[in-house]
Image 1 (cartoon, rainbow, N blue to C red):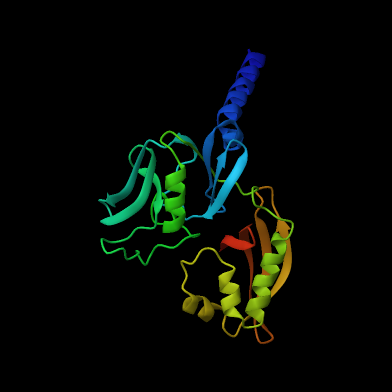
Image 2 (image 1 turned 90 degrees about the vertical axis):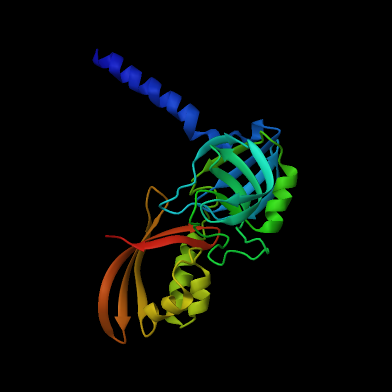
Length: 251
């Protein structure tokens, strides 16, 4: 009986891995496919195995996660009204339940962008958002029922130089080059003025940088004001394509 249970668990894990773990690599098997990485906030589209183009996008936030998995474009509309935000969504292509879609940044009837929306940062919504020109290009290329593969993949754009991003980040802070440090961060939810206030008059010393099994960097630092040690802390950094996707203090 125990052996039967073990075999059953192994069978379920095998089916699960076949169904979910490798779907993101299926783009080579379709005539047309769109591949979206919600970690690095990149969208690439392919014909067979050939990459046509890669675009920066904005995806989920913690309260509104973009769904992960294998989907198909079900409807296309050159402009659609969001009833929740009362904004237009140009070049919208829906891929799930009339709720989730790929579209340009929201705008009003005069074509003015929603000032809260930017590319390559977490969006307050479930959809995948692009710059208008990128959205138009993708809209013209994609057909109804084009496959959409969405994954949260930290490894896709990982680099051996990712650790240098963290070192550069703190070097800029210690050199009072706050704008350069701020520009390394993909997440712009903290305004530059607030960011500058946080680090003004402080120096940060890196004690150690280690990568864990989840491909996150665990960074131990000491914060000084002059020669006085203010506090020690451990932060988690997530890096992709030379930018800090997310960083937070580890509790």
